[in-house]
Image 1 (tube, one colour):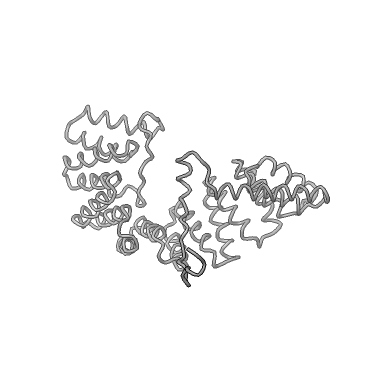
Image 2: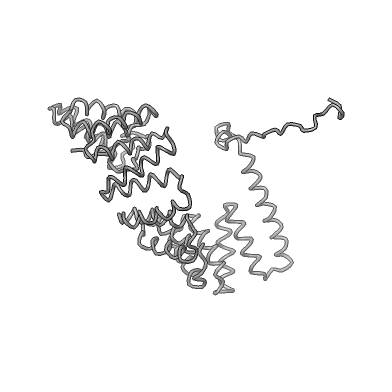
Length: 349
């Protein structure tokens, strides 16, 4: 087409971005990742060159260490930052980056030590407290994590990520009312977030507030009507409220949406068991274990169900599978366990 034949308003073409996972499947690297790594390498070379001209510039050394961290060169970063804090024991930024390098290098005790030094030197840096909270979560030190995430919120009341992490820490401590309050705060920033709505539903469920749990769970399927976990959670709540038909309907809906999802069958089996329908329970538990070999709850309840009907050999076999899973024996199955947002779904009776 010649210039004078071109339309006045040419169409806008959309460039399709390939999902990064496809590159891994093809055995090649994601171009976006390559671009990022190339940028880090260029900045690293530039900073190294600048340091040759001003070798005593501690800020540039911290910049270089940060680039090393971004590039995954944690040992180099740690070595360089140790030089910095040896020369300047009050440099909070150096301790902060050093703590980050340690945690990414899987040295969590050292990370806590260095990040705490950074916090002592600068109490108003929200990122330090946030990172400390994350490290404490990795160490199962949930009381300390709660303290740090609270400090982040004191510094920045609009940090919704800190609220979300605070809620997670409260959940690990089984402080469900505090978790509920934190989740309500974060939902003010992101009211359509179905994961947060599901977490709120779970917190209400764990606290025994089933009506509130139901309202929150209904919001999840309103946001995403094809979420199998959402319907599975609804089934658990209805079961807890003794609304059996609604529970069965929602467990079945979850299975229809995701035929490979084991948890609806596990929960439905628990419900049938509680109703005394042992044969139906066995059928569901067998389906669950066929879909997910590492569903410990299904194996345990299958064992109990077989035992109830006198099938002792089958019961023993199911119990061995359960025991192997609980002891970490890989021969029990290599699949990843399906975990409900609402623990154990319904009562196993």
